[in-house]
Image (cartoon, rainbow, N blue to C red; front, side, top):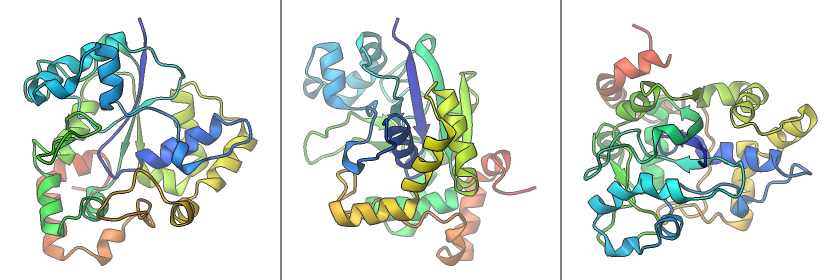
Amino acid sequence: MNQLRLLASYPRSGNTWVRAVLSGLLNEYGAVALNALGGVVAADRALIDEALEIETSDLLPEEEARLRAMAFRNWQPTSSFPLKTHDAWLPAPGADTPPFARDQIAAIVLIVRDPRDVVLSLARYFGLALPDAIEALGHPRFSLGISEMGLRPHVAQLVSSWSDHARSWLDADLPLTLVRYEDLVAAPRDGFAAIARAFDIPAPPDRLARVVETTRLDRLAAAEAQTGFRESSRFAPNRFFGAGTPGAWRDVLTPAQAAQIVRDHGATMNRLGYIED
């Protein structure tokens, strides 16, 4: 049976940065091509169509949700690179189980980030006003891949609220490595070495040091400005990578907005070390 390695995160929490580093580690020369990052998105419609041998465009979102775990029973990975997912470990509407089969999970790395910083990036990427982004952050049915304007390249993904997303993975009793985005920023070599170990990806110290330097967020942003990035959004074209500075929320959110996020997510923020009792 094929085994799944998952790189999971709430959107705008550092997943793509991690993919860039892993891509460099798997390149003999440590090179990173921004528009050719490794890995497959777990919600990729073409992947699911091929695995199920059907056209998911003919299905309702609820029907897609019921079939996603089955798709990965049939899918044959071509590399050890982890699947990228923003799904929560929760059944989506119409499904009885999460989108992956428990007995297929070989390793998970869960990236978490302070929700007060997440909301700034979420607002920019999705073209939302901050109050709307804060509301989305707390919505139990927040989802990706749903559109009234035509077929999306990804099937629907239940992300849920920031708190429910984190708790769903942390409490699932799965082989999970938890990594905080802020710790990656503070000590990138240690953090990325731990991620590489979780996925059994070789990370020789010299190559790791070279890749960490190559994939600094400011350098990724500069490369994006020069070449563009296919994963940037129409609301912020070629501005996928921001400064990524932990604590930037202090200069942007009003005290009332910051307090609302703590009210909505305080228990999970405390659990992850973002606030103290």
